[in-house]
Amino acid sequence: MPKPQTPAPALEVDLVGGGRWHLADQHPDAFTLVVFYRGLHCPVCKVYTAQLAGMLDAFAGVGVTSVVAVSGDTEARATTSVQEWGLGSLDVGWGQSVASMRAWGLFVSKGITEGEPDLFGEPGLFLVKPEGSIYAEVLNSVPFGRPHLDEIVKAVTFVQEKNYPARGEA
Image (cartoon, rainbow, N blue to C red):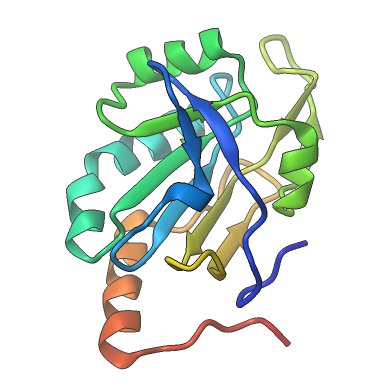
């Protein structure tokens, strides 16, 4: 499982609408924000990713100039999410492998209801520093209890003003 102040695992995913997103190619002002979501079947993900899409300017305003939402969904399911959830200009990656989910320390669940994939990653949120190390991570084993995105914006402001170091590495 990755820890703060260690290199983030590799992440390369195809994007809805075309192209590939590579974590190694990101050069944010302060942080890259990687949000892992469960997939199209998750109504909590719909609300959370829509909120994220609506906050891209707020994040950019505090130096989080690279933001991506990623799931293991197929291209068709991820495209449906973008269209039906109104995700606008949010970069949405699809096709994350179970091996990648485990490399990031995500909890992996088995589908239990119709419409759920056989296996899918549970939510995670990571702030990655420009040089590629993990600053902060939040993992969930269930769809609820995710960090409030407005609090992440405030936290990034605090971190920059106080030069607050990453914690949790010991």
